[in-house]
Length: 163
Image: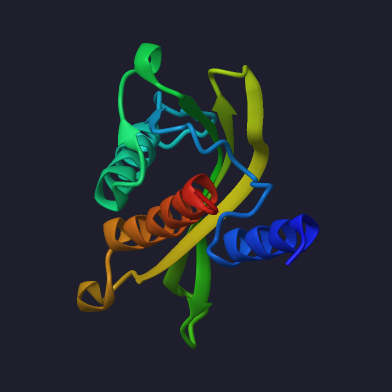
């Protein structure tokens, strides 16, 4: 086999094993920092809930180490843009029975070593519902947790995808 043939064979084998020649993110990123998100809503403590849930998901995933900002290879920054608690369904008397909690965040991930964005300005929305008079079918806190789980799962997928 010629050198060109061997080179093509090696490239195909490497690409087939998942070691493609290009990637969306830098492979040398091993750690991440997540400062508290900015809360642009009137819902108190939402920034604490969102930030803590993202950190918990990253720790559980274990792809990246969560560290302080000075030691991090990457920085995940975000803003909580909207919080809504909307009537969703009504009874015969037109009273709201079910509510929908909707949270929207805008997030960016930066490579601190190269001082560049890995991805930025992603708008992510999560929602959850609860029944006003039926706590057994979910409460406001359950609906908020569901909305935040959708958001943090999406952020986790964006952050560690292709790593």
